[in-house]
Structure formats: structure tokens, C-alpha cells
Amino acid sequence: MRYEPRRLFSEFFGTFFLVLVAAGGPVVNALYPGQVPLDARVIAPALVVMAIIYFMGMVSGAHLNPAVTLAFSARGNFPWRRLPAYVVAQVAGACVAALVLRGLFGDVGHLGATLPGGGLALWKAAVVEGILSLGLVSVILGTASGARNVGSNAALAVGGYIALSGLWAAALTGASMNPARSFGPELVGGDWHAWWVYLVGPCAGALVAVGVAHVLRGPPSKWANLAAQGDLEESVRNQTSPPQPDE
Image (tube, rainbow, N blue to C red; front, side, top):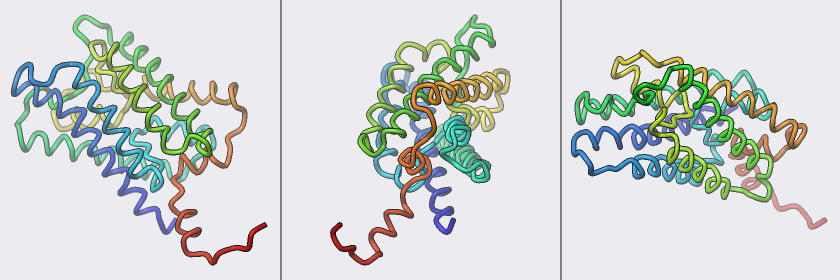
């Protein structure tokens, strides 16, 4: 637990950059129409997630998403008692990113808020977000379980899935799959008409993914626990402990 402040800062910092990029694309496109096309607005968040997993995954597990933290806890990879602080750090990072965008550019482009496409019923949007999140969390839990072999290259699978989801579903819901990413711009921009879609959908999808993971792989492994919690403590211990004789 002595590393917990580092982990919480890691979640804050990573989610800040995720939302800055994900919400910043629509904001910049509103200022300069056509300069940030839809495919760029979809791929940019995927790339930033890949980069964040590589550079800080070992510190906190790089959840960056309350639905992911919920799934890891329900799966047994992450202690429930640590979930509230992780979620607060993620939401705080998202809100600060939205505040930065508003301070720099004003209240334009709905501050990059994720909103259902025109004419799409809110319940349908929630179902779409749930299905997208089911896939995302399944990829995350699967690569976490294979962390001993996959390692940081799980970033490729996670980032690839985020890009794929956005390419087909961004016009429907914004392909958020992340309550924090949606909440930050909603809070700062004051548009709450679809807030529950991006809370209920991702969390429900994440919990279904936990059940799928149990069917596919059974109980969680030690390597999945390290991937979920970050292996900073073990890395520090290995660096500071004296060399052990060969077995």
C-alpha cells in the first residue's frame, strides 16, 4: 500500500491524457471543421491508450476506466477496497482534461462529450455501449490472464479493439466504453441528458465479460493479478533484493 499514491496518480495522469485526446479531437474539429476527420478521432484515443499501457501499466495496471476497475474487482484480480480511490482518480483526471479543453478553447463541440447519434433511442445506445464494453473488457481480461507471455504487448490488442469499435460505432454512441471519459465532458459542459447510457452500458458489459472470462479460463491467475494491480512492488523488490543462487 505504500505505492498506492503512485498508482492513484498514475490513473489520474493516464485518464487525463486519454480524455484530453478523446474529447480534444471533436473540440478541435469544431474549431477547424474537417481538420480532424472521424477516423482520426477514433484512432487517436486507441493510440494514446496503447502508449499509456506501455509507459505506466506496471505502476497501476493502466485501468483508465471505472468499468475496467469494476471488472477486475469482480473477477478477483483487484481488491474491492481499492476500487473507490481508483475510480475517483480516473474521474478526476477526466474532469481536469475537460476543464483544460474548456479553458483553452471555450465550450465548443460539446467539449467532446459522447452523445447518442441523432434518432437513436437512449436504451439502444446503452445496449450498444454494453456490447462494445463486453468486447473491450473481454480483451483486457484475456490479455491480463496471459500477461506472463503477452506482457506489455497487450497494449496492441486493447488499442486495436478500441480503434475497431470506434470505426463502426462512433456514429452511434461515440464508442466511449468508459464512464470516466464520458463523465468529465458531461460535468464540465453541463449536458446530462444521456449520462446514464455511459454508466449503465459499460458497467453492465464489464460484468458480463467477467462471467465470460470465468467460462473461458476459470479462476484468475497470479499473472492476471499482477497485470490488474501493477507489478511495481514486485519490480522494486527484485531490484533491491540480493541476488539468489541458481536453482
